[in-house]
Structure formats: C-alpha cells, structure tokens
Image 1 (cartoon, rainbow, N blue to C red):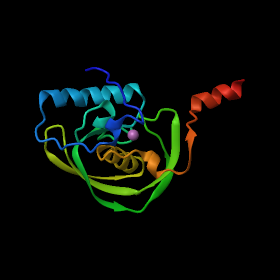
Image 2: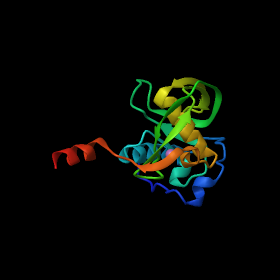
Image 3: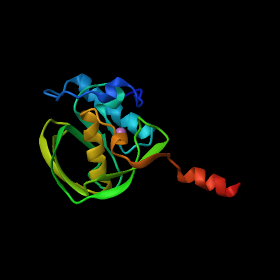
Length: 166
Ligand code: NI
C-alpha cells in the first residue's frame, strides 16, 4: 500500500462525475488499500476516490464508532433518508476548515462491498453524515456549497489545550 496525494479544493478533478465500477481489478483493489492508508494518515473519517484523483465510484469510511467498520462502498446509492441533523463538517480536500451543514439524520445506502457483493446499510448520526458527504464527492460536489453561514478555521482540541497552557 502507499499514500496517495489528496487533491485540494480548486482541483478540477473534485468537480467531475465519477464512473461506476464494473469489475474490481487488481489496480482498483490497490486503490482501495491506498485510500484507507491515506485516510488514516490524514486522520479523516472518510475518503472518496476522486479525492486521490481517480474518477471511480468508490468510498471508504471509518468513523470508529461501530464494530462493522471500516466500510468500503462501491457504486453507493442512497435509497432513503430520514430526519435531519445540523453540525460541523470538514473535508480532507479543504484542510483546516469547517462549516455547518445540515444532512439527513438517517440514510439507507446500497452498495457493493470489497467482494463486489451487494449490501444495504442503515446509518445514522456521524456515519450517515459521512455517507452523504462522500457520496457527494462522487458527483463532483464539495460540502462547501452546503455550508450555512461562514466557513471557519477548524479548531482542534490539542491546539485549544496548548493555548490554555500558555
Ligand atoms: Ni470530503
């Protein structure tokens, strides 16, 4: 596995519609492994293939809150949504920034897994938010277009603690 370069907001690859995966070739399997490594290295909870410059409908997510994670979603489709949640969102393609976005509280998603077997998942809370955010990437959409109010500098707990110590 290898780290891949994360594309940053303004890169045209982030605005393109991704193509479905018909066959999981060795090259795409390697991509998925690399996507996980890249996501964990960057301390993200999700990553979509276009964020590493590959225009295929592949998403990886690990919110670290459920035993079944991490998830690979190939050709994901959101089938149903329910309710809504409003909260802060960020993106590895726009580092150091965050903004308030309203998303469904629950989603039902259908996708293919790493064996190209179909599965359905009902997600809520952070996982539902991540599914929506990453699926948007596959259609060339960044969360910044959904932000309510200002896009802000993300403040991390570590930095807050350092400031308190000073
Ligand atoms: Ni993102």
